[in-house]
Length: 316
Image (cartoon, rainbow, N blue to C red; front, side):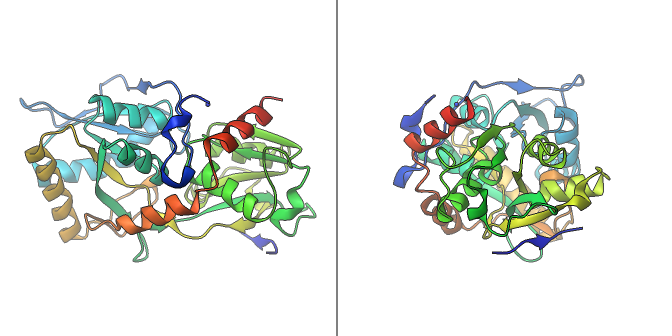
């Protein structure tokens, strides 16, 4: 594919079916000073966690979703308390140990929680009629790369190792192109976030970076300098949009109350922001589980052993 121009073995036993390895790290939350409680009432709040998907501050991540939860408070009659986890795996831990009731997670993170029978899909975003998003591998326009195979011996930045769009899918794309990050790249840099990877490729510290298009668009809208010097070397196929999932530990009646609240938002066709603050056409409770099963199969080559090898390569 030619260029397309555009304006840690922590718990390897938790590999998903077909061998997808999702490595866990230490759980933790970041809360803002006001405790992030929306419309406090007498009943216990629904405890919501967000993955640090866009690498911003806890306050900024929560701000992206405040319009949604203002609407959900109205439609469900429930109130909410928010936290941003320090890693993707921390969100899974929170769902499974009962310290979170609702979570916004990446698609592969949901699969991990589902494998442990900790989470159920409850709602997801729709943009342009599709419950999907995309990631890409970005390079500088002045580089001589024409395809992913040209990245042999080059420096590539990835985000969190549990991130679908900044690690798992890009690694799968490289493997398809005959490039094994554990052995074929000149350097593997694990930056931990999309913005950090983007900054690395803009500054020339790496030759390529794995970044979701939502994160790139956010940086573009914020006026981050240097983005005009980048182009897309490869774009992924459609991936399931990051969903909201509910903990199976939450009582069934409260899960149903949440579901009805999301369903009313869907019925009203409210245009609310989603991942990376990008506007959505709507939220829907009709989430396609088959798309997530297809993603699990797509990422089957990312075994625990392969991910561990990539981690070891990054330490050199």
